[in-house]
Length: 455
Ligand code: BUP
Image (cartoon, rainbow, N blue to C red):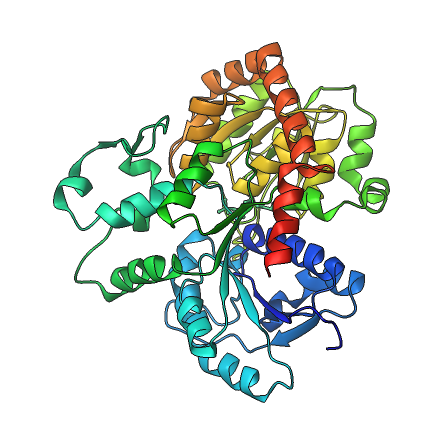
């Protein structure tokens, strides 16, 4: 490439919640003028389309997805299998090391740095092999990473594993948490299992990378970013989120066309609850029934995004019979991908019943929409804790993988908290903080520019 800037290799982890923010970062770096190659497997190519159309100079390195035991053939993205597929997908992607090295060696001007997802800790040794620096990209918040690091440091101790409530004394103001709040792999550690030992070793090796970029912002997690900086000897640690805002929107494309947005246009200001559990998680039948009943009892207007990915056997979509007729007019059930950011920004939306995926949280904060937290797996329980116990912009309605809420209580909480002025005021203040951080001279934009300069 003719650019005076260094060529970058971007390697996203194939889950929507990880890929989308890393692609937003790619947008920013491509606009800055960096020559970029994005590594992708064939089935994940479509998600790159908006990036590639906006920046024709961005190249792709398309490598075939390796097959591994435990992963059905054709699955290349977590959205097609769910959270339990993370370990096999990580194991599969590890096999790309040799093809990447071969591509690098034959490239006329190979990359000078690699920016890869924090789930791909093994790319630290790849970067060492290629003798280029690595940037670890965290699509998550920083508190959860501080906690995971703490767990990985202590997990070999029997006492740690057995203590039911944990408190990170070394991190003042950190909410306490239980084993059930943690991602399963953080406590299910077994010395004898090479997989756990490998993931744990990768985690610490990845810490030695050249820079750490978080999709969070300084004002949201100041002490947690500071702690992480100290943990890593004040190395390059940048809070640059929410990246979807720093990248810049094109709302005109989204707003006109989608049915959900058209439906919202017909509803009064601040009157609709948006319900979605992200790209991976599907509720079980009992949870679907309790939720449907709770929504009905609450009397609120709503848009409910129902995931049907694993219904390939022709089974029902889990929505109770007659529900859609009973709520017609005040609710909309959608069984497809929707423009979530635009929905949350719509003037008619006043609450978000969410699984607490980190991107969903940032999008809700950016839009000034309070959250009804129903966390189930991965980092979601930790995210929910910080929202409810510390930031105060959310109400917990259910917690834990197979937990089922009481429909009466759910209906009451939704009806009461939906109109809470306190929650609304908190959400509004946070949306201003997001706008400040991502606006001109805001902390995230400054950090991003500093990061680009150091690159
Ligand atoms: Br579903 C859905 N439209 O219909 P999270 C999701 N999204 O735009 P994750 C849509 O996907 P975990 C849809 O706006 C967000 O940017 C949504 O990311 C977008 O959850 C992203 O919230 C989803 O981080 O699960 O990745 O599904 O919590 O396990 O990371």
